[in-house]
Image 1 (cartoon, rainbow over the protein chains, first blue to last red):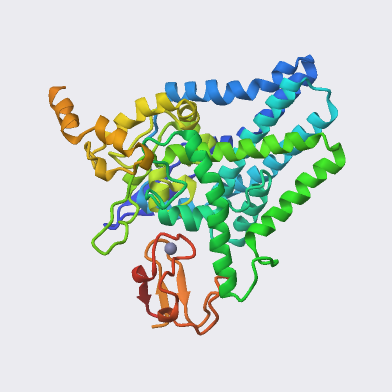
Image 2 (cartoon, chains in turn yellow, cyan; image 1 turned 135 degrees about the horizontal axis):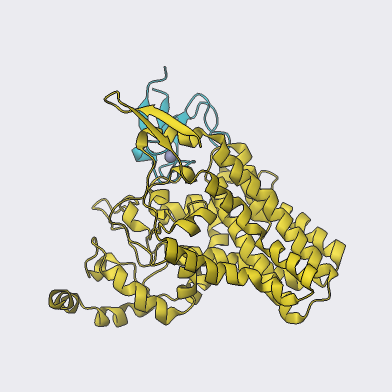
Length: 401
Length: 56
Ligand SMILES: [Zn+2]
């Protein structure tokens, strides 16, 4: 284990060993799980094995999160610089890119060459999509970084599920407008997951196109030019997915459509739970207050953090968007999710259960304390929710318990 | 005088160099950047937040 040394302001030497160092390999290799299913299908000739990743993702991972619980450890501030500079950590994000490419190609080869039953075809396509959704997470970590290598790797990995507009929409749209009614990637109290999906996915395209058009017009360039970062990524998508169709035939088209759709679905699942109902207040100047840690739902569940490059330490990510994953911190008194992301997705897919669990948590947050004016509310549900959670009633309930 | 820094992510706008990628040519003064200028790296600090740094 590598030990980092630094000096505090008073001159005392401190040292730090990152216990999670080797465990971060999980984030790079977790995407290989579709290939494990394929391997067992190959040796047993039983197609049910192809569905193994569903069990890993939706049963095993939430269970491990439930058992291992939360990790609230932080690296000391003085160590952050050395930890950020350690190239091992970024190498893992680079490594995830060929792994994602390999996963897509092997799954495509298997679907294109095996005579699968319809349910196995469908299941494997959805699993490939979920795995490429993890690829969007890798693209997220890379796309926030300043270096050209990382920016280009982000374009490549986002091209796998045809989501090349993500970096621009996310960095310059979502981060700017997060936890306000202006942001289609921040879900509102009373808005169910499916309504959110329908609002977010088209908006990500239009907002990113607007932002990139503005940048290009400052350079006196047209939207359709080689410098367009979104089109660069789309071109890789066309080359990659086009090659799959050329090699394995037109019957790959349904696979690619399902794969892409479920990767986007996976990303929207994360976005739905990350800021549900949270609201930045407007200051006297008319601007929204800065994004603070309590404007994101955080999850310290150790296992899912280790497979998501720490994405779930979302409060710190939005407070310091360029901070590298290994250095993201936990803060006290944050809005906290009941499980890791994978478990929370399952809850989000059942709107009544999500509202039942999360509306209470939202109202009880220290900075909200039942005050609905401090919540980002779905306009169509506003009257219903105001009626249901009137301020006085909430306080009465608090006093009586 | 010519350099301004983002207090969040340390991005530096140097008027001598401009920022070609973002479409600001060399020589474009910080004060001449658009009012809605947003930090190109972190996007959570704005023109008003940037701090002048000595060009040394
Ligand atoms: Zn910045």
